[in-house]
Length: 297
Image (cartoon, rainbow, N blue to C red):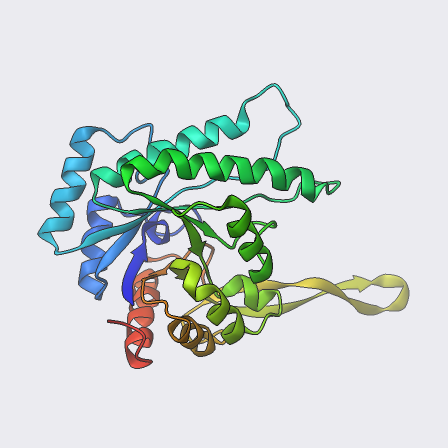
């Protein structure tokens, strides 16, 4: 598997140390990665801000460090809004088409997207139908650029592996694949080896981190006691220190035939804080763990 560092890890979005794109590419090369996944939004590769000169500079920086841009990370939520007159899905389709254009300019063949959060009040079937149509159009518009759309199992409709497979089947596009990660099925209580084996033939990227579960309780004054509150608080820790059975997950991917891009991300506050030194130690641990376990090329 090709190890890739997701630039969101150094985007400063959770108060952590911030690096720009050239610095992130250099950092990833320094820490032993073969490529990067660039966030398709500010402060990194925004479709609003990226010019031909910007792309040229990123290409040159990648070449200077012997690196590749494997993935552009898109951010969407394909659920309807309460303002029906706003072409919300059209905006997101245009955004993803813009990312596909940028990806082609970087010799990158994958744009990661999400599915949809289920809105208050439910109606998952209605959301599903609009989501499928939007994903189909995203794939159709990305195809001329030689880009595959990878759906990450992150949002509500598509978190469970069986639901993600159902979604891929309904979208039914050759350039629609899975961006299948360990943390969501782990939190959902799935068997990680079985889920990974099942999804591996459909997966082009995986993007991961490790977490611990911290139980939550709420004090009940009338009882002079605490009541268990669900769900647990989940906090990011160094790779291999959390509750996720990462060995089972990656072995399942490998046994199922996956040998693609394995991204590492720090996409939430992490234990130890957001200093550059701490971020680097987390990113280094991933490379060390993947090599020690035999999952890195």
